[in-house]
Length: 506
View 1 (cartoon, rainbow, N blue to C red):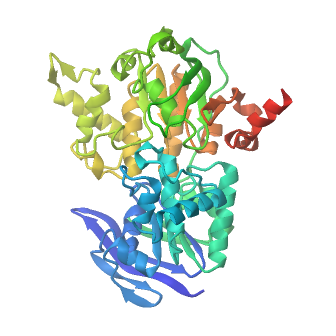
View 2 (cartoon, rainbow, N blue to C red):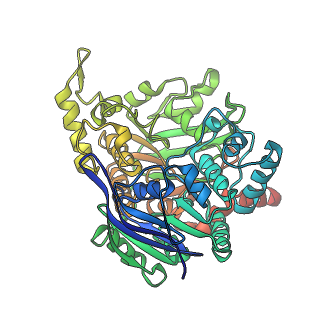
View 3 (cartoon, one colour):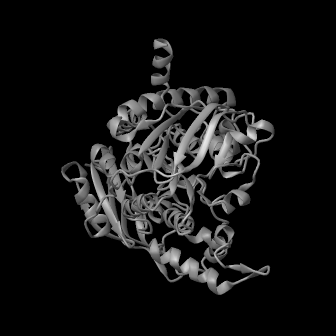
């Protein structure tokens, strides 16, 4: 196989932290190459070095046999390298086609048409005229993927590209990636879904603590083999507890209709769910089908007035008119999809971010902050969830996406809430951390907490949820017992086919 990209002894440090240590990596032409590793293993840093976002401290990079210096993303694109970041690089005040026009040449009308064509072809539908700030995180990722594909790259770097797709669309995307490979495009594929890596990748390089620990042909390895190389030990999956009696109603939404103020938002129609103490209800669905609007109504970021205030009840009382703080006072906790901005303030320390939602744990008295208790709680979050950071004083923006997610999950779970709502609880988190988070959620459920999970990852929902509902175009499907359904049936609901069949039968 002819070599397209080769790294020799590439290293990168940030202060005293060595993110990459003498990395050797070879990517062949017309291949799909996986890069595996836990959060903090150095995957994202390595990709940024290849894409020109960061510069290596040592080592060299060869492109098609010639040593090159990739000093910017523009230089990378000129070589033929495209990348979809884990944290998106879109301007929120511009619409989709305007963002794509920044790097893809062509008239706006032609680009809009191509965006629709790419969306239909790859299962990545998005409105070309929608403002980015109105899009869900899943829709933003679709824009990033489309933008890269429209540049016809020789090397495409994909960081968790399937996290927002239903099973049917994942298969379509894989068919496209294989077609691109057969036409000569190489792909660097980062994913925590080991079954996907085994299904699509020709080779895999494993990182641990910033170093290459080995290479493997994933087609001949099991998922357990890959996980063992990544984390250095065997993993034990989360196992739901035995069925038990459910407690009181903790969250009830009663036939709720809601039209958001955002003209690009999704109108909710007749949404109804009932969640009791001691169970986990999962909401499946492709991002952009009303998840954002539903979560904001539950969290208190969107309030209801008039008789609609009674449509949302927590712990037995109407809360539709209450704000977020009042709902938290009832025992509600929340993990938003957006880590930075809603889950944490980027330029604040972890300790101060703890204070935002856990201040009721003795951290504030008489209007004064008890810094000792604040730091103690923060240290507990860090230790209990293995957050890879130097300590409570580190700013949130300096954590990797996966470690920040672990911190936010820890902050909310350790509150011991009566009702916990998690949106994308393990998005971008490595397999070891994801399994630990799921075990914690199951344990919290068994202790009597009512848990609502919104996730694009069906395997996650099937692993820990007692019941599932699917959100499609602002409507919720009937409640389905996890043990009595399967991914194919859920996928049909995610694409709207099951609900249409039900209407035809009626």
